[in-house]
Image 1 (cartoon, rainbow, N blue to C red):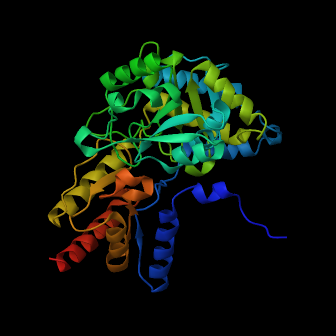
Image 2: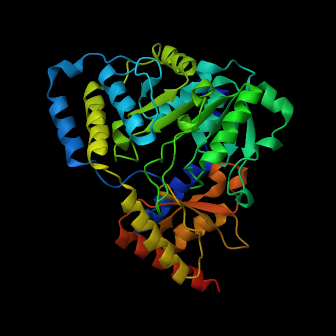
Amino acid sequence: MKITGSKRLSQLGSAIFSEVADWKREVMNQGVDVIDLGIGSPDLPPSDRIIEAITEAVRNPAHYGYPTSEGSLAFREAVARWYRYRFGVELSPESEILTLMGSQDGLAHLALSLCDPGDMAIVPDPGYPIYSASLVLAGVEPYLLPLRAEHNFLPQLEDIPVDVAAKAKFILLNYPSNPLSAVADRAFFEHLITYAKKHDLLVVHDLAYSEMAFDGYRPISILEIEGAKEVAVEFHSLSKSFNMAGCRIAFLTGNASAVNALKTLKSNIDYGVFSAIQAAGIAALEEDMEHDHSVAYVYERRRNVFISALAEAGWIIPPPKATMFIWAPIPKGWTSRQISREMLYHAGVVVIPGDAFGAEGEGFVRIALVQEEGRLLEAAKRIGDWLRTLE
């Protein structure tokens, strides 16, 4: 019997990520000290309070039964309190909040819970890869919404064909954005909600980077907009905001019907987040409400150090207002994949080609600020030295 993977597997993810991993292994096997600025995984640990909460919780025998797939009421109540504190948004813990095993869990399954095969959804290009991959899993047709520098990487909603807006079940956006580091203001979200109501669209907003903003900028929740809960849901994650990426805990908030759809699907496929991790999540949210335990200052310093060092080397990059990423326009004469490969082989620095996130990402690379400042300065020096050899 010949056993092969399904056809849909060939449509998942980006081959570029695997390709970059192969390049990295080859370079490391040559003894090169590689500085990896590729994957957006926090390099810092959670706070002492979060670690202490995990330690205490794992010693509690009561936490070793099956948790509910929707998450404990205590965690959902903590989320509701935090949303009230952070955004001034009132949420029902019972019907408007769902606990997730990381936002990737929810993003991967949302289309399955909302759409039927043959339906359409609008997703951004460039965009985080799971946005499109989730549509493949659900048999949903994507409409790729171009996000371009001349519009500050904001979608031009009026350019979406009328028949697409009529057919699509939802539109998915992400501000502050991975990979673009772009931001959106209240006026944009107001326009988006008006557009969604006009076309009977659900808005799915990924707000994973709300706590990583700089220069006094403070991202808002789409649920702050009047009437948003009628047509919108929002994903949020503790991974980046609280250095809990390995804990796998996040949540979906907003429209009760959409939250319930995903809740129903997940009740059939998993038993939820380990109760001890939910206890740690409560500790993280409570600490933030008590002491504004933000990680933004760390990444703001890293951004400033790295972009200044690259500028001295001759690579001028606009400083992002948010996220742990730099979306860097590349010098003319290169493709994103070419410069990423050469930068790794000749400077020992890993970055991700922009076209890993969609065709509109060509001409850029994504750089993750996931090393301490000394390593970032070393990376900038290596890149600068290499660029000068090309002059």
